[in-house]
Image (cartoon, rainbow, N blue to C red; front, side):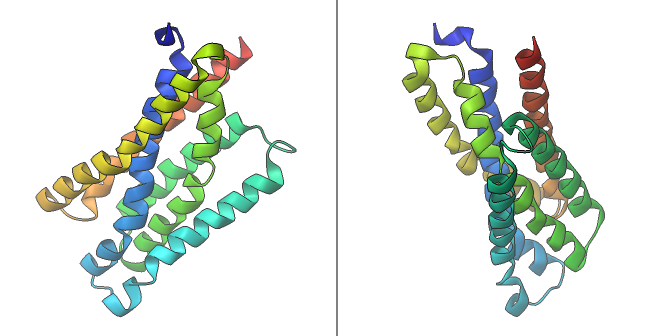
Length: 184
């Protein structure tokens, strides 16, 4: 049964929250800057900074995985970085806050390519079904930003970023859980 693979199910959940966090980082950065009185003529370039940070993360991954670091450790460090940058988004303001939001692109770069093989490891004949479930978890990119938007309407654009903390915490939990099960 597909239900006897907890690494798949946790991977589906981790990918769901990851895609949601990734979309929030890229799509809300302009409104975040604008809400902090940064002119729109400047904020229109902020999404590019997030994407640039993500490309830097991809290049780091290409250069280091698996030669110097495993995918599991890359996932662990990415989750730690996501938590760290999210916290800094919350406790800073203005350009610094937006800068840390763009750094989430760096933290996000290696999450997808690390979750995918970990979640599918050992599935055998269930690999196609597992892959389908992982693809369906992309819907987190549609659902979690809605929660962010509701929080932004209720509290503030910046306080709504609290939604990122449980997202990266769950990714970190998955990374730690996989590391523990891989060593057993």
